[in-house]
Length: 209
Image (spheres, rainbow, N blue to C red):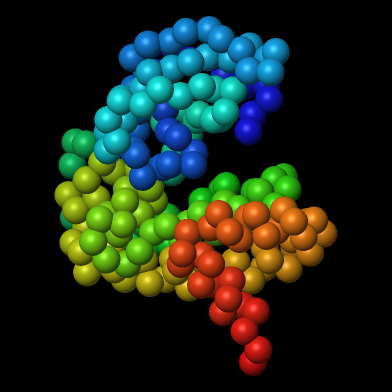
């Protein structure tokens, strides 16, 4: 949770919610000054491409400018549409597209985040699934495209997700080891608040071999 909001947003600014990248790009429609625990912050009404209108306090969420957001694609790559203009995919080659679509977000890998925060962010990624709407949400989060199917077919997304899921399992093993200094009661809380697939992944890690 941010204690000193780093940016002041204005009406019309384009932003990304770092914990909900699948919401897509949001446009700030109203702003109001407020405070959180004595620290000045903003209350923003933001309309997101894939989630509609949300009210967000910068005292709780460290929103990112949309221009900071990396994006994505795959094997036989269709030409980018006009809607892809903010995505790094527009200038990415095949290798770069695959890397974008299969890498883990910075929230899970940030070396400056605490071990507990990295573990929490890593487990949160297990909310995505390889089929249906969760797959499209995942693809939107990876690519910053409002409609990933305008750029990829479903089989391509499934292939990307398969690699992403393997990378995620490998990374989870690493962050679990790094979290050995986190108090046990906090670890229990993190595990209990994880998505069901995240809890299952933890159980696999601790299963006797």
